[in-house]
Image 1 (cartoon, rainbow, N blue to C red):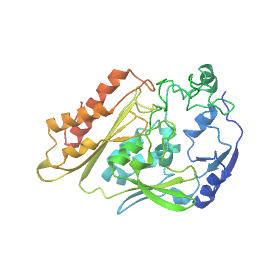
Image 2 (image 1 turned 45 degrees about the vertical axis):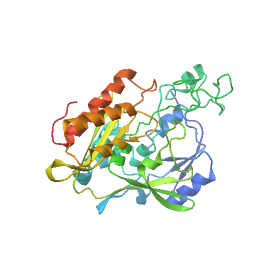
Image 3 (image 1 turned 90 degrees about the horizontal axis):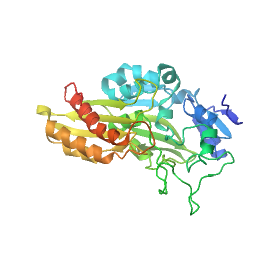
Image 4 (image 1 turned 120 degrees about the vertical axis):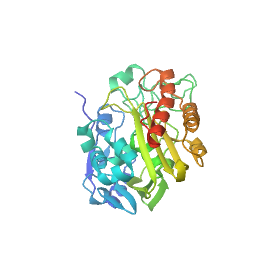
Length: 341
C-alpha cells in the first residue's frame, strides 16, 4: 500500500489566509478535491511539507451566470458538466468537464485543480520504486530530494528526449483547452493582491515549469465573456471511454454571421505538448464560410503543431494523424454536420 509522507495540514479560513500559508512555506501546496495531489503524494512525485485546504471556502464555490460566466476555483467538475447555463452558452466547457475521469472523481475534482493539473509522462507518473529503478528523471525527484539521473555533463535527463535540456511532460487538462477557446480569463490572488490574465497566458511550454503564476499565488476564479452567437465543442481522445487522461483534446469555438460566414474562431489543441496550443491559423477561417477546404487547411495546420513524443499512450505517428481527424470532426460539428473525421 502506498502512503503519503508526513505533512502538516492547514485549513484555510479565507483566500487571504490560504495565500499567506503558501507564502510561509516554500513547498506548500493547495488541496481542494485532491484527485491529482493525493495520488502524486503517494507516489512521492510531490512531497509538500504543508498542505493548505481550501475546499470549504464559500468564495471559491460559486457558479454565476450574469453578464458572462463566473466559476469559482472549487466548483466541482460534475457541477459544471450538469449546469444548464454552462451547457447552453459554453458547451465546450460542459463537455470537457463531463469527460474528465469518472463520475466519482468529477464529484471531487475541481475546476481550479484541473486547470493547474500537473503535467504527465510515462516516466514520471510511476511509484517511487519504479522511478528509482531508472534513476529518476529531471521532473521526478529522488527520495532525498535530488535528481539522481544525470547526463555526462552533469545535467538531469529527460527520458523522453535524452539530449534535451528541458522536460517534455505533457499537459493533460481537459478544461483548459475548452476555456481558452471560450476566451476565458483567470483571477490569480497573491500577497500583492489580485490580477487577471487570459487563460492561455497561465501556461509555459515546459513540462516542469508549466504554470506562469508565482508559487505563492492561487487561482480563485474563471471568467468567460458572454457567449451570444458563439458555438463551441470539445473532442477528446483516450484509450478507454472513461477515467483516462486525454491523449488529444480539440476545443473549438466560433461565431457565425450572415450566410454562415465565420466572424471569429478559436481552436485549441490539448495533450500534444506541455501546454495547450491556441492555433494562430484559426484566424484564417474568419471572413469566409466554414467549407471543406477551410476545414482541411486548419486540420493540416493543427497536425503540424502536434509533436507527439514517447510520453503518453498510443503509437506516435498515429497520434499525429488523428489530430487531423479530430479537428475535422470538431469543425464539422460546429457547422451543423455530424462529423466523424
